View 1 (cartoon, rainbow, N blue to C red):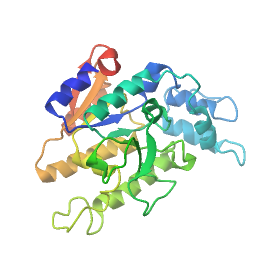
View 2 (view 1 turned 30 degrees about the vertical axis):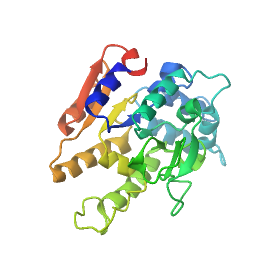
View 3 (view 1 turned 45 degrees about the vertical axis):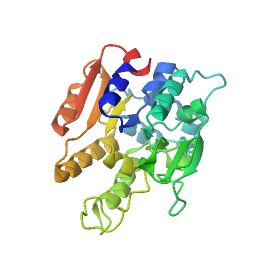
Length: 282
């Protein structure tokens, strides 16, 4: 974890955004694409290598038998197996706890919270919905606000609520629209500098995204990450108005794919290349 620790030395207030990398490093979960393929009613009769994960899910859902709930099958596949090695997850969460850093994750599974025995809490119950549990988090203690300390926040949904899981393009579009309304509309929008009190998304994980330095790792940030790529652009737009630097670091083994590197470079994200996965998870 020396790459992450090195960034934290100069940026002790940073939050984490973590993808499926720790699961793959620990060997406790399949790739997202394989997970989706396994959730289908039958073997897919077309190559999926050139398709995005969202497209694979939409095709599987499109050709599923009536009353088949693909998301419930995905949730079943994401249940932790007895004896699953969560040592990688535990090291990362202990590092986050040490720095009182909020953790955003795209993972639906319970690996991070299980590794340290964290329990679910709700920052407030007002407006709770199983489809968008954006005010819910896992921690060892209750918080009064998302940026107030260590907590594990599920950006793409939680296996606890199968209908919260974002898998298809429609899911991502819905999440983006919900976030857009909070960020850009009404008197309580994010950039309304004349507002009284907090902005209207201040009790969701979005407040972490727009108010903390962010260290991203374990995440490919490819073209299927429609929602997260849009959020990165919105952060840049907001920070431009504030006249502030991006303060986002993307840690990746070797050089990122050209399209990802281009996106990060143009948005002012600092790309940190490491030689080995142990520099991230070790």
